[in-house]
Length: 350
Image 1 (cartoon, rainbow, N blue to C red):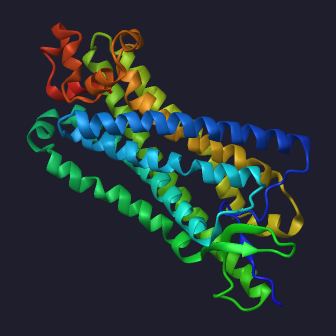
Image 2 (cartoon, one colour; image 1 turned 90 degrees about the vertical axis):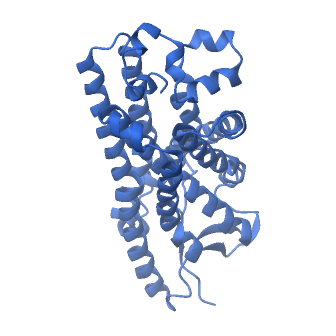
């Protein structure tokens, strides 16, 4: 019987567990994923409740609600990935959940990244063009714009729709992975197909799924920071620190994962035949770090928008509602806000 050729989601055939370092990284990754699941479901669920049921619909709440939905949906699937990670990449949940879970993961993971870029662009427009934003920045427009990130995320997920399946290897172990048996008959043809697929997919995901959103976030928040400092706003250091934290956390969480995925793509053929497994050892830790960004988003976009001591005094839902409101900044520094345009006032609620 011919053996079907398959590859791991991140471009590796197998993740290494046979050294002390790899086992430590493996355990650490599972701990991070567990924390991400707990904080992500709790934090994003709270944001969904506040923005979806307690607040009037505004442009800001529409964006935050979609971001929270993406992060919540993604973190809700983490128990499946955690079990698979604990079983050393084996998949005990069957064909349907193999495809469904990874579709949900990819759509919401990349949807979250694209939504962060859209939020950054929205903030930038509010600050740089406040008059235009006041006249044209509507909930209806926001609902139309928000469709774009989800479409891009869906496009990046198409390979999972087509190629993701369960594969049983000699010995009985079942893995959830890409399989190209229906495209190529011989093992050699399957290897060639896998190399072409992995290279193309890896480059596209790195450019569209990371580089473009990262550049958008960095440029937008850079322009915002310049505008804030030029206006010499009182307490401008606080929003500047928040904006810096947003860009830094996005980059720190995502860059290692994307770098390992890109290197795995470039060196896929070499690692496939040489037995060089260093990149495989980094798959779990870098993936768990990227996942962790999904539970950071509520803290960075919501919790850091208000003074921490106020959040200990006031109820959390009320604090979230104030933080996500279009005019939440008007509750503080009223002397300053009275002379600021609405867009600059909203910046204080980031």
